[in-house]
Image (cartoon, rainbow, N blue to C red; front, top):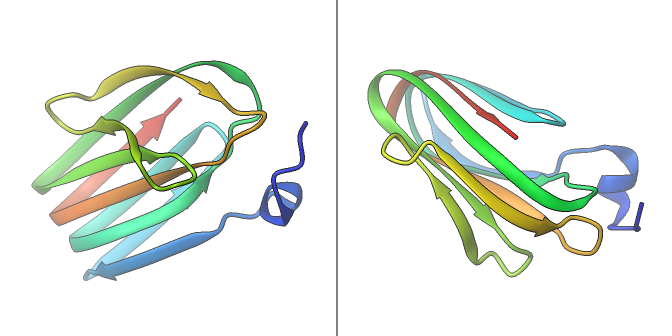
Length: 119
């Protein structure tokens, strides 16, 4: 495994967020992210942990009663590589997980319900 910085080494999740919500529970994981929300608007960005060079398949499961959610996969320069939403819930992309850093950015627009991103 290539050294990508202390957060990777410790298994920590570095998260930046700007959220306004009645309730917001976000659980980033090794192979999935989960969110439970109530009247949530804003965004969350965290480091994605990919250790292998391979093709990754992403699936966004959205179970919202109202509002919308979008998930972006960003490179180390914060450029969009992939976008997932209700219209396009599944995508596949080749990633160089050994050498590069990637980030997920979740964007919520008056969202209530649950959603999960799996890879």
